[in-house]
Image (cartoon, rainbow over all chains, first blue to last red; front, side, top):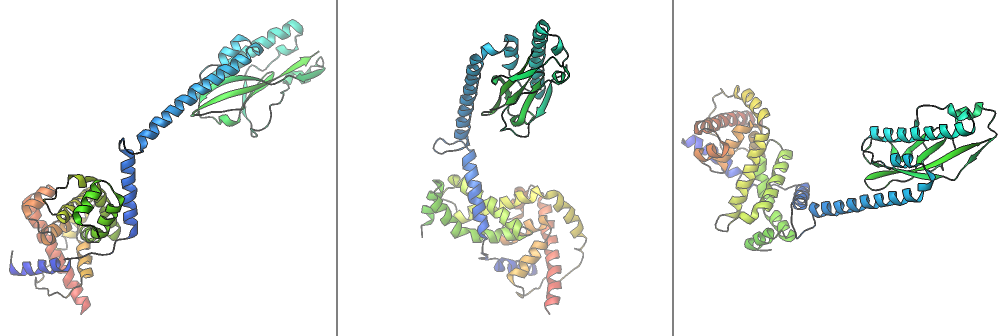
Length: 218
Length: 181
């Protein structure tokens, strides 16, 4: 190193000796935040961290799932007498996708239609003219109580003198919460009644479908 | 005020009181170091933050036989180098651009006519690679061999970067000197 070079470097060395500028307060806040997250994410028996929360949330989820399944079984068994066994099978199905949900609803509708046609055929012939596809619609007012849906063909049939709404019944379809549907507002219209979701729980949405059926009277 | 040994032991137990004490005692000195190794104040704050987190996390591995201040400085310098490597793509581009200005020959003889802020400003203007080598060699007192090992470069690269940094600084200081007159 030359003498000139040494002098030049010495100028910098001397200038920065004991250089201690003021540190902004935000730095330490950031440090504490990073330390907290680091401690929180790391496994440590002695501290509350994410692992404890994960275990707790897993336990809660398991409890919620078993609770909702128990509730479904209870509801289903309390209304067993109100539905044909085929409808119950379709309604209890575990839905894993939107397509499954649609298929499940279509199955309910199909079985209901078959039953309606056979019943009507025994009495009169006018209910045989039904819409072959189930309609799925969202209800903008979830708090609204389920109401009777008047079948379209009834309006044209002079033989129908009056309609009577029976007490709402319930069916259950279990669907995961991540289904790409607004399940909170879900209602399912079929030929002779409307299913409407009234309850959801935990990480699964239990489509606790309330069913109102209109009965045509001759 | 707690003794250094007490502070270190407290920090090893992750006691918040002693962590605060360590911050109060050493953060300004470490921030000065960060300002020399980075381009801007914001970048220096980021490096200091990362460096302090590393210090608090790894203080358990510190042995009392070595200088605590030196140990902390090494951690912060390594953090600054890591930060530089993350932005290496941009830094390389800048090095090429800046090298074209380094053909001017300027005298070495500068008296202490510049303030610390002025010197810091010219250091901050250096391309990242030059700045790191310059700081490590001139201010921290590392040898070229150590610099080459830490940065993973050839010894000759370290020497040439220092030489270029010096020329760049001389040129900038000469310009500054003319403005001041």
